Length: 138
Image (tube, rainbow, N blue to C red; front, side, top):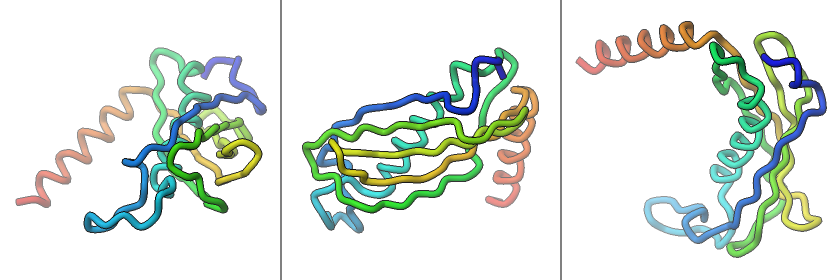
């Protein structure tokens, strides 16, 4: 990783909550708010934004853990502001603390962990996963 990535480095994303972000099960919409799984996606996007500009050309990151406490609703039509902050860092791991808000209301907090590997190692992991999946499908 590049030396610019330090504890405290932040990145954020803003997302308008839309109808397609509502929780729905078997085609039935449950609430007119942002679903937890959409919150997770945007929280991971913010954490990725902390890491991506700091990767060396031969490196790539893989998400390995996410934890979220969804504590308040984000209604359709509102804007989510999601900020990730580097909380722990080593040569091979970045942990970000993440907070999602609508205005002053905290909607969710959590952490996301990314592991950093050389691209050739990731390519090998992906090849093995594909081979394993193909053999189990037979």
